[in-house]
Length: 349
Ligand code: MG
Image (cartoon, rainbow, N blue to C red; front, side, top):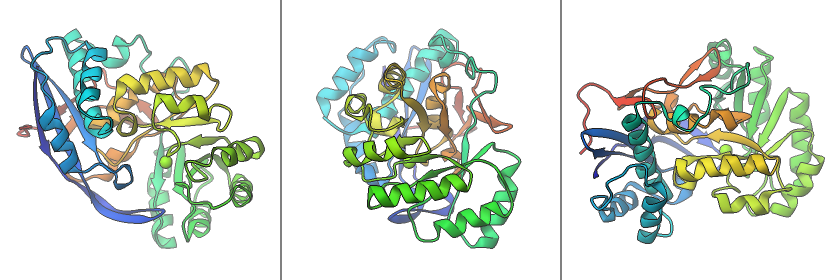
């Protein structure tokens, strides 16, 4: 199997602000794996807080030699090999993993969800809604943005734990009653403050809270989850399958992201383990292309929550096809693999 890759910084439509930092561009690396004339595509996106960069991803990929492997389905062997090259580099490993899964589906001639025996949306008739994030902005802009998207989504997401968050929610509530989810990104400093905020948010029509407290504060998260009127989902606290055992009983559920866990191989195991532990599953993404967003969307059957809007934030799309949002719900592609192809004229490597 042959690997190709290229750095591809993503241009953001709007400057994006979360607790701690702002940005207008995000680092990204696109990758392809070709085997017997079929090509699968993958991607590494690198939010600053995970510590990877275009340089680190390219340095890792320079070490990867897939030529000894002759079967794109040999995931346990290939992941074991990748782990011998580095104990980390999860986004870089995710890029290889996504491309291999895409290649598997294309080789089998069916979408990944079907290859896994999952249903296209879920067995639930109502489908899986995804949130769309409303960023901190002036009240006029927040109202305008909310009105623009309110008819397209069943749930909106708001970043909280930053100055101006209450004004933001008030501005949204002037124009829509849609349920909201919130992400505090570890922004609240104590469990008591977090509980006060969550109770206030519940009264504003918020239905779920993500990462209210610092990621290592498991005792405080357990205290809060026991008292919280809303489900508490761990994001920064939950990176890998191995985190689930200690998070069990501390939070209501986990936010699975491919760039944290190293790809679909582990993400699917995390979803299954979370279900076995009675925990809710959320599917999340970084700011990334429709490649990685579509990849994780194939796990929709396992999920109660989805926040898959990362690809809608960028301007320079290298891929077409893939997951769509139809009447607020995720619609999985019927094309083979993860369901995407490069746009006309775009080549990797
Ligand atoms: Mg989050």
